[in-house]
Image (cartoon, rainbow, N blue to C red; front, side, top):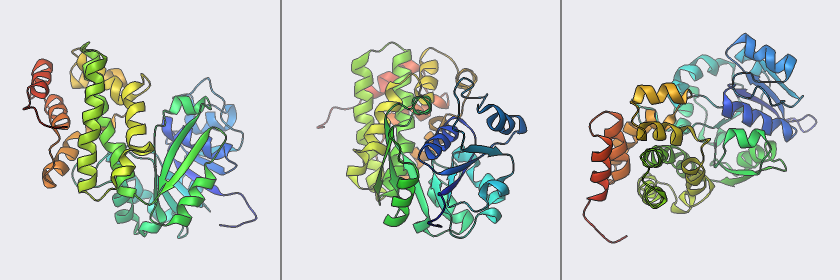
Length: 336
């Protein structure tokens, strides 16, 4: 990275979290080019300083520009920040890889598991691009995009095996309202982000059924316990799951009405079908896409995940709402 110019980041693409991440980077003094798939979105960002699809009433930083050309976005980029659905990551990245420069650090914002391979986003990135682990970082934490766009206080964990790369990403996105911490635990950071989405679905279902705060607290607490079991079995450090990318993200995603996973679950708890809940939520809900892959990982590692098991069965129409609750509550009692 040239010491005489600001860091440059390409953010792909212009969804709600991608736009929020681009805003953080721009506010931190990083030069940002945001990739949008549609010309009208890129034009609106460049001429009106608005993203009409997600934040039509919020002004974007003047230093943030947009393009529909991934090659133009990636030209000279020190950082490539990826914010796209986990299930389309491989296809998109295959098209973009030729434009990624050798020195670029890739930063994943994805919080899902690829369904057919059971790979985490950083594993897909390394597989498709051939980048070494030291150039692939993960940013995860309690980061509700609408609050960040309002410049409300937030924090995140940046995980990378290379401490210097993690610190460079940290510097590129550190603002008065956004506080990033570094960690070497990529597995823990990614798994915390993916696992909390399924638990948030369960919390939303309970809330939609009117089961009360005791029930939602129960699901969050035991959901964290089963998340720690799987993540540590995969090589994560338990402390990571107690941090921002674990418990922090879990609390925000399970508690906030801004959370799309909790919202989706609430629709299910009200009696909507999966398709009806998807139409009502309108945005990608990673927990729905990743639940079965997470359960497969649990089986492969010999880990018991009762909440994830019940949520997956409910998503596939194998149990009713009442049966799901009964299945969880009638499990044999055991020490905590």
